[in-house]
Image (tube, rainbow, N blue to C red; front, side, top):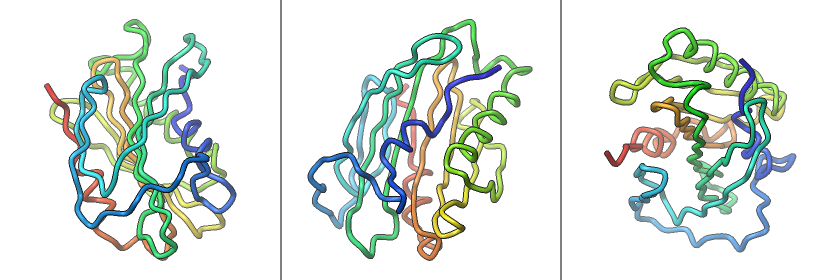
Length: 189
């Protein structure tokens, strides 16, 4: 089953250097992490600054899908993480669901393959994970000639797909900010 390419929205934010290019004024950097809550997205997460929301409509084989993205971009030259991002989309009930055991593995395999392909990267590793009882995957993609990487945690919660990502230079990959962000994700109900 072909489905939405996970990193299409991410690529809209990244230029050739791995930095965001959303045309907005850089957000002020804060030392204190705060909780960001999305009632419509049904999640909360810790982030080091104000999250910006963007909604794109993406055409897929199953029709148009609204792809919601929340991101914080740290424009400091010495920032450990350049982009913190949460995305979600709702698939039609009949297409994929977290209790569709036969579809889960192929769904995540295609998602990881699309992520790697779309940025001409290399899959460094992946693992199965869970959020409560919901299936997920954790993976890392190296790209930009092995100079940058994207860490992703993705979950399928009923028919909603969540993707959490951090984008950083490889030289900054040994930091705790990425795990702090990725591990803080919680559903509201």
